[in-house]
Length: 115
Image 1 (cartoon, helix red, strand yellow):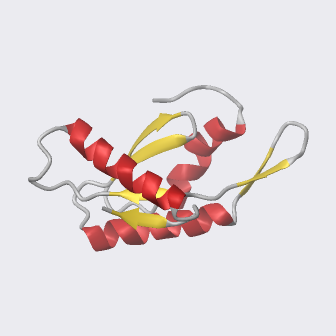
Image 2 (tube, rainbow, N blue to C red):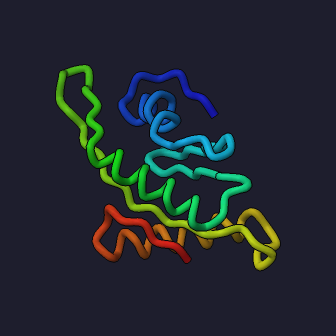
């Protein structure tokens, strides 16, 4: 999904996010507002958690200038799950990752949680 827009969040998705995630395998980005999904095929939980922590750390040092030269700083609450045989549907995977995301937010934000 690509939106040609100059808002800081859209610029983040289009320009910054691909640079912040190392390419273990080509990731897939699905974005909706300020939340997004990163799919890392062929990655094990250790590789994926390393990517998530690197993303969280890099985001915390990233600043984006707005049109009025204000700076936007980022933090990231990241929920992760490993796709295994326990999930029958893509929706189940998304729900599990979303649950982990809300655990991260409830634990104080700016952290990675794996469920």
